[in-house]
Amino acid sequence: MLNRIKFPCIRRPQTENGQSLILLALMFVGLLAFMGLAIDVGFIYVRQAQLTAAVDAAALAGVSELTSPGMLPVANLRAAEFMHAHDLPSVVITRTFDNPANYSEGLSVLGARQYSITATWPVDLFFLRVIGRDTFSVTKSATAAQFPLADIYASRRVEDGALSTSNQAVFGPHICVTYGDPFSSFSNAAAQFRQTWRGDSTDRTYHYRILIPPEYSSDIVRVELFDPDSINRPNNSGGSYQDTVVHTSLAIASGLPPTELRSCSADQKNPCLINTTEGNLGFPVDRINLWWFARIDENRGSGTAPGNPNVCGEPSSYNVGFNTVTLYSLYYYQRLADGTVVETPLAWYYGQSGQSSRDNAYSSFNHQTDMQWVSPGGRSIFDQPVAVPAGCGSPNGGDYDPVACPSGTPPGPGNGFELSINDDLANILVDGVTGNRFVYLDVTSLSGASENGFEIWAGPPDYTNNISSNVNTRNVQIINNPNAHSSRGATVFGMGHLPMNSNVNFAVDIPLVYLGPEYAGTSVYLSHYDSDSGAQPPIIFYFDSIAESDWSKTFGAGGVDPDGVSGRCRPGNCNGQFVAPPYQIKVPTFSEDCTNPADPSQRDICTPFYGGRLIARYIGGTNDTYHWNITLDGLPYLVR
Image (cartoon, rainbow, N blue to C red; front, top):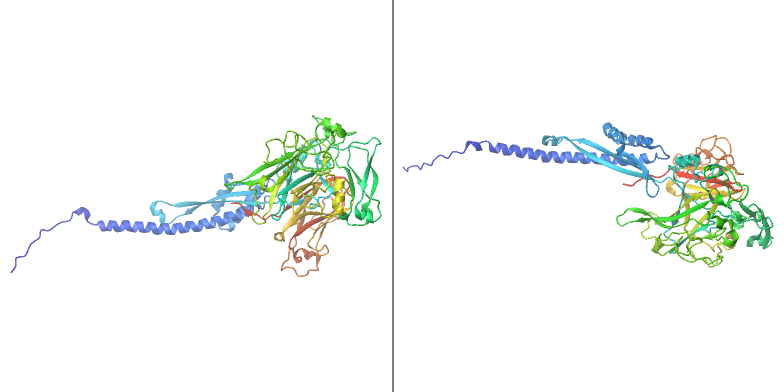
């Protein structure tokens, strides 16, 4: 029998007993933490998505309420409603709107209304509580924008630039608002109008933008101003003017002589347009020349002493001390390398008015802007009385006035109001949908009290060797040869507001705004200010893409207007006041609710709309200065 080998007994230390249990416990805690992290992170992700949808919707809903100053509380209320609709806890909504740092309103660099909101949601955690984390806060910010100001056609004839029935006009800042310009005056009444209709009581500027379409075939955009200064030519020795009125070819063929001598009023302080009598021939208004333009400015403001501004009245005789100085500023928006958008100046002009020696000596100083189309700093037109050197801001002028464009002001080549797209508009902001580009023009009266009539046109410079700078000669040339002067799609728009001066006292069809098919079923809001001086009701609105017999709206005829409102002032009886509330025009659309297309009450929902220009048939009084204001049911969009 073999002896058994005995091995010594090895005892493990007591400190290692149960260690596997501890490791298992630690592993379980870690596993639980990972499981909790996965579950809670997923839960946080769901809440983040829910908060994002809620805040985006709230911002879009809120900005739609910012239709006038003081509407931020209403925007917040509407935003809160949409957050409730997305099932956010009441405590999140309450905390959001209890803190003013979480919401704001403002304007974008391009003038769009903006509404911003930030909301924070403390999300309760479950499994991660085991490691001491009870909540995790998710935050979402959104900014929505809406551009409610409509692009109003600055002229009935934006394509060819002929003047026939009206022009634009602003008064100097030292006049009362009842003359027809509600924004330019320094008066408290004007500030109130600006606060109500523009949202800024200090903004005395009329804003324009010049559309350059992608198919524009020239590198040069020439911006022209008609009669930019408020200087009227004087009386002649006989006490009245004898103008040689040149008739159009159609009028001559209809029996009128080629030319006639016609008299104009001898009063230098007042406008004077000579009736050519071509309107009696029965032809459409754009096929004949209605008026021979002699003066379009009004010398007003006899109460504008330094201590007594903003008083209505007119001097007993022409007083150059009341002439209005108007500033015309060109700029565009440039996208920088980092993606930001900045306003970039191009050139500016403020003309010859306000210099008494020049104003008083009209003949000897040979005012080159009066009744002329001019492009400050641009190339000369063949029949301009004096050759104008090129360049903006040159020591010798480079314009119609030595102070027109300060040295150092862009554009680089120094072309003033004649712009090269390639050289002067570097990195211009381009609309990603339409490809359109815009150059902006601001018009502000700086001093004086008179009315300064003017007009704006933009297009290529290829006509400068054969189309006159004189307004009357140009009108006849354009009417005789309709394709002789074309903007090639460049279009001047007033941004929401347009100051007008009517030259006729009969009905004309005025194109106001173009609306694309996406506006079907929305509303347009239109108001005019100070419609008096011979204007007459009603105003008929229709679209040029729809037969007027199928769809139109007649306002101001008496009784209840088509939008259900009664009691508005009627055209011709709105001295010193806006039409209020604005006319609301529902853009037609086609709806399944249409049951009887022949029923006039169903025209809005039975008429297909594929886009078109909204036209106003308006009976303006002679020399009636008034103002259009147009806003849209804008389509809100998220900025960020």
